[in-house]
Length: 77
Image (cartoon, rainbow, N blue to C red; front, side, top):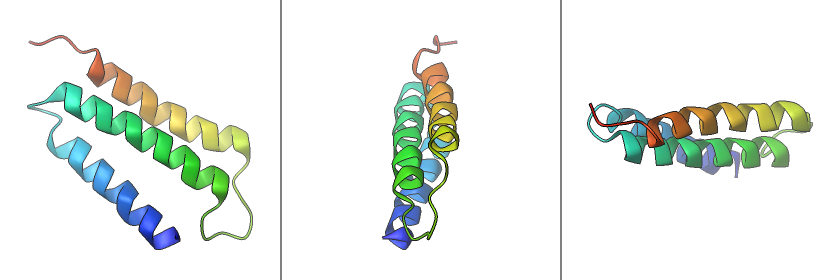
């Protein structure tokens, strides 16, 4: 599960980064999905013996979701 989770996380990050300059709203949606996925992976401790504390897991997710919201609500130039 850990490797599958990482591959999905990496695909979301790559997709969000590649479509950022031309499609900021799509990139924002992908960053929000990345935040949700990051929180789920951290809270379930996929592949780890000890899970990350819930506050740190939520903080990581909030960072990606805030970045996604910034690009999702961005005005066209």
